[in-house]
Length: 204
Image (cartoon, rainbow, N blue to C red; front, side, top):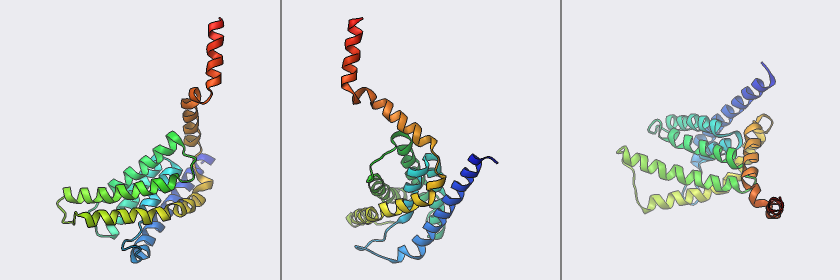
């Protein structure tokens, strides 16, 4: 195998390890701790972080695997969490590939969005499946509080996962995304150059 294959295998192995550790910590430790009457959810933050760091494909696969493990361990409807986490991982990865966000607060914002999407999506899917679940202002309040709690954890979780994956992260999509973003903005970034170009064209 060449170096690229070794790097891919190392990335897959590390993501699998992160997924397993995240689910075990969530079920065995974090689910036992309440803050403001709600528990944090590092599994959605883990999926978001993997997608933002490794791309849409890795994010979607990690989302499916982590969601499936959560559903099995928590005795929930199989596939519901997987479906939501696939979307979280994929769109986090697409943001990385298309925009390559350099803002250090991007994980915080994405963590809040991922938590809100997961909470609302879970309630909607359970309602559509006919599962008895309280749909009320209390549920909305719990979702809002969980978004706030997860926002506090988003940056630490992202930074920890970044350190684990850093040496095996793919470089191609990041570079392509950055070039595409720069190219799409280049006509707007230097108006003086556009003016000079227009002047030369008229001179001809």
